[in-house]
Length: 261
Image 1 (tube, one colour):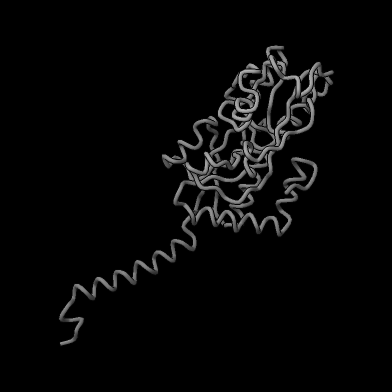
Image 2: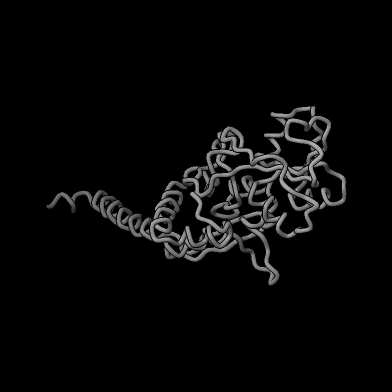
């Protein structure tokens, strides 16, 4: 009597292990048919809703290029900024691409891909400017709620300025136009895109763009759930590929007029 006949359950056990091994390899080779992204589509040129109602922008085209490189479909849903990380952790979607800065605080909650954009912040105010960045004391500054720019304002200026937060930075710009704010602090491309849409010379940048990795992070990256290392690594591989084949540079020039790193 053979050993396998003597212990049929053991034989089935090893066969099951072998089967699972090959099944796992097959899944890992192409387990994503569709990747569900969430974003906050009021942040042009990174993400916004075009006149046809479609979510588009720099981030969206980068994500679409990554999906094309990975040979998977992708979808995009519009969420409030503050709900993005909690909803990702609850499994409501697979990834976030929303001009999300990589910070130590956020890295405790999610895993990030390699950065695809280095951020800076700019103050926008009425022109000609009646104050400089060294004269912000007592000013009313608008900023998007929950953003790294809000934390920067609170830590750097504390109670010396009055901070008004908004669910969308576009709402802050609206209050700036209405005279309810002295300035708005926003991502530099967001600020410059807004200024281009308001070419009446009433508003402009105050001082130079602010770069502070301690607050704005080491760059913008895609966020995935903790433990989704395979998806994160697949994004990183695809990101390297679209940078190498020129796709990334083409998208950057479309939205920023220049190549970026």
